[in-house]
Amino acid sequence: MSHIFNVDSVNEGKRLDVFISEKLNLSRTKAQEAIENGFIKVNNSLKSKSYKLKLNDFVEFLDEFLNEPEEKEGLIPQNIPINVIYQDEYLIVVSKPANMVVYPCAGHKDGTLLNALAYHVKKLASAGSPLRPGVVHRLDKDTSGVIVIALDDKAYYGLVEAFKKRQITKEYLAIVYGELKGSGRIILPIGRADYDRKKMSTKAKKAKSAITEWEVLENFKNYTLVKVRIITGRTHQIRVHFSATGHPVIGDKTYGRKTYIEFGNRKIPVLRQMLHARKIEFNHPITGEALKFESPMPEDMKEIVEILSKN
Image (tube, rainbow, N blue to C red; front, side, top):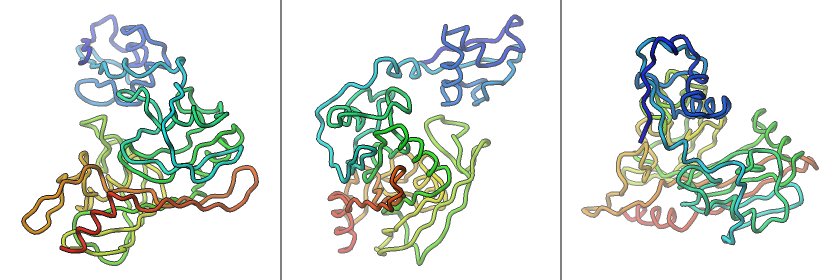
């Protein structure tokens, strides 16, 4: 559902964020957040918060934004099992399963990794928003693997700075369509798709540089298991880059082709994107100690690899 407003002579020339704030009785900050996250369209296109409205523009506001959980509610602690790889007073490293969202958002108000951490950990960082304290990076819901969360504010800012300076190494495993050879690098900018706010694209008008390195680990008939290292950290980067080069991650419902693999005359369902964050390396933000943590390939990916190896 959405609200649609036509711009009249009274509102002509008004900034988009001011217009939205007034029309929906939102704070200016909340209106800007809605614009920046793609919940606002002007004449079916995404615009900046400072866009000056023109007479007869039609402005669409997606109601989904209003369903975002209120930040002031805070996290609800939930006794959800988590696989802790490492923990000290400053940070925690977890192996996130597939089908788990990192923090509460629209459509996922609880049952997230942060809800679980709020139950299992005595103290979370205060830095970051109330619903995502200590979050310095994220994994998509259906991407499994290793993730680090700050438990201390100083550690939080140290990790944020390390990510900005590209001092943190992240390595993934992915099973993609097609038969790749050797290794390579994908250098394509990524931005929010102009036609769909939920998707990212290498052809977006507003895009940031993105670099992905890959290396073949094993070839199968029509498929390849690759090791992936991301130099930048754009939203959906691996999925978007491999899709753009004609080798989408199998099981990817957003950027992929099919949600099954072909084995002889059979079609075997793939229930989620075959993407796993296998390793993360960084210097401890407080002690400076060199740290490396790994999460083994999950069973569902192992099963797909085993099937493909027999094809």
